[in-house]
Amino acid sequence: MRSVLSDDSGAMEIPLRLVVYVILTAVILAIAIIGLSNLKPGMTTDTMEKQIGIIKVSLNAMQYGSARNLIDPASPAGNLRTFNINLPEDIEYLAFGVDPDPDNNGNLTDTKENLITERGNVIFYKSWKGSKIRVPLEENIELREGLFDRGRWILNNANGKQYGIVLRGNGKFSITFELVYDTGSKERYTLAHHIDNFNAYIDPYDPAALANSVWVSVYPNSIPSDGVTRASAIVQLKDRKGRDAPGEVVVNLTATLGNLSSRNLTTVKGRAATDIVSGLPGIAVITASSIGLNPGSTYLAFKQVPIILDIKKWINETAPFIIPFTTVHDLNYSLSLAGSGTEALWEWPNASIEIDGVPVGEETVDSPTLITRTFSQVTLPAGDHNMSIKMTNDLFIPLIADRNLYVESITLSEP
Figure 1 (cartoon, rainbow, N blue to C red):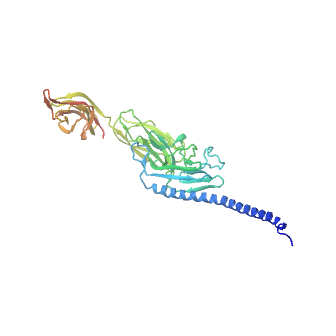
Figure 2 (cartoon, rainbow, N blue to C red; figure 1 turned 90 degrees about the vertical axis):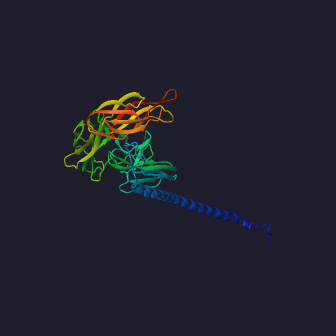
Figure 3 (cartoon, rainbow, N blue to C red; figure 1 turned 45 degrees about the vertical axis):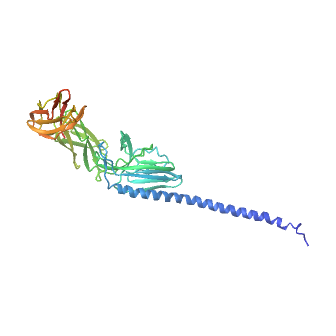
């Protein structure tokens, strides 16, 4: 009988079992690693699709809101949306409105001229190992990169181009879009409050499109009729969908008021401009036409140059001060007084104005320093006039109180 202490038959079994266990464990780990590597791209795609789906719906809803006028600094903000975006670590880029790598060479900064890069209504994203995914948006959506200029966001038009937005690098991003309106191009854009360094340009036009019409716009849309201040009249060729079109054609300009620097313009890449000035007030209708194209027109307001009456006089009695002046045109005027006053017995002076015997209004000048008070509007014919200015509540008590009115100037301007 073999002693248990001397039985070594199990000595060979233990290493073999251990080897089997190690092999099985390695196989399981390998399967897990392969599974995880296959699962990660799927998780990334799912994450991106969910985020882009939410953005797509929201961008579409934005188009039915109000738009900010890009030219008017006082225009209220347009419809705004802010998106918080999380880019997984294996995403190379997320682009709004443009294909940042149209030649598919992996370099986002070397896009050559005249490559088709999309026209704004699209989203692209690409993983480092996967293919480029294109997500189309509604036809009326025009995504554009913004530029922060003098306290407000405008279109980035560097080098005469417009640009899309490219986000690169994993992590969290916050990007705000605003609906804006360009009165020059008559286009509504969904403007990103964001600047990148990729210069991924939007297609300036459809290369296959032919000009269908000519549009004309002015900037600014109102100027003084002083014979010196000029506005720019800009013409732009458009295709049937209202998009910028290329071409060199002769455009004829006419204006019902004012003087154009040039009445015959030749467009370069579909665009041309000239100046207009006027010494007469009124509304000018500017029309652009070209053979074979639908004409376009716009309006430009020439404002009356303000009439400023320098008075610089204290009025310390109820007797009126009379000042003559002359108007050149039959117009409606807004009248304002710049002046100050002295208080007496808790009451400030009241300034009353009449023109040609007709009351214009009465205002209290309640400040010891210069302030401006605006009176009612008044319609005056061209010709000579007399303005009467008086203080209606004069008060003088020797050594106790003295109420006086100081008139620096009177301004008559077009409303």
